[in-house]
Amino acid sequence: MFGLEALDLARIQFAFTISFHILFPAITIGLASYLAVLEGLWLKTHNDTYRDLYHFWSKIFAVNFGMGVVSGLVMAYQFGTNWSRFSDFAGSVTGPLLTYEVLTAFFLEAGFLGVMLFGWNKVGRKLHFFSTVMVAIGTLISTFWILASNSWMQTPQGYEIVNGQVIPVDWLAIIFNPSFPYRLLHMSTAAFVATAFFVGSSAAWHLLRGKDNPAIRTMLSMAMWMALIVAPIQAVIGDFHGVNTLKHQPAKIAAIEGHWENVGDEPTPLILFGWPDMKAEKTKFAVEIPYLGSLILTHTLDKQVPALKEFAPEDRPNSTIVFWSFRIMVGLGVLMIFTGLWSLWLRKRDRLYTSRPFLYLALWMGPSGLVAILAGWFTTEIGRQPWVIYGLMRTADASSGHSFVQMSITLVMFVVVYFALFGAGLGYMMRLVRKGPKIDEGKETNEGGPGQKRTPARPLSAADDDGSEADNSPSLTKEI
Image (cartoon, rainbow, N blue to C red):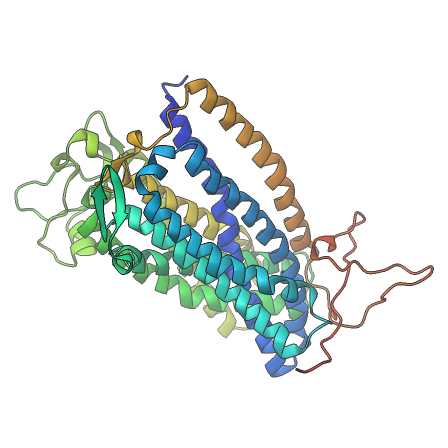
């Protein structure tokens, strides 16, 4: 069907599940740190606006965290079901790295998550804040180990091949492989930027509908400060990451650039737009800027960038896909920087909360960070092909060898279940976002009694069927 084989369906299935999964950890990483900042500001300033925002976003964090855990478990099982030969070959490296993630990050998050979500009126202020900070740190530690594992697959080192299996010989070299620092910074920063635009979009939605209060304004203000500061930093990190990729994965860079061959000693141009044709071995309709490819990737005006024709056809990534996925990521990044700069211009003129054109831009930029993350991951993973472990193991040799029918059935099942389950979860989360922060969420609430309605004590009970918002956020009154 459509010229696809069982291996193609296995790759599509993993790409589908990881695309769903990566959205949740990205927002979890950003929201966890955002919540820590909000609670810290409340403790320092005693401004109840920060407290109200904390209670509002903690509910969304709880839903997002739960969906992230569930979708992550499915991915882990796929290593054994669909990619068993990869697990047999490299499990001695990837297995311990994922185990370290569970033992350090997941246990840390699980240990303090309950206190963070349910302990607001049961523990002291300092302990509750400490729990929030520990959850935030846990999400970053999780990112550390996951990126260490994936980066090792991109730039493997610290191993030996014994009897057809990878044997670790230097764990520090394995963890801190050449691409790891750049990829860790790039992904962590992307999570913060994506969360900033998610929060900013939520605030813009309410302001456009006339809901203007200190909590909404604070949401937009903090989000735009983050966009203004972090989006340009992400561009700089991306530049360093690109130079590192050129050194260790030149075929990926050639595919991203749609660059097929060098002409004499001429510097490499930058192809802004075009259509890389893998069969014709050329980029059709190319719009080029002379010298710019060399300047961006080598930081000189005379060095050339490796071309796709310098690599055997079977070793070339699919340039058609990564050429455009990379440009989607970069294009959204430019829009993020523009949004941050526009917000600064409006802030200086006291129009940040009233400029409807800007608010509409902020609204539509809400999913931009997540789309950019997906585009970046497609660029990274498809650009690594045909290798599952770069230079060591081809993707075709890593699969379990299931039949086309088996892969077709399971892929359809994944699509149906994921859209039903996570679609409902995302719908519920967006319902919470649409309701917005409730002023004075931290006041004492009715604990229930005969003939009285009891406020639910569960973050997932934050939205009733009638659309009213439950409130279970009594003020912290105790000190450790």
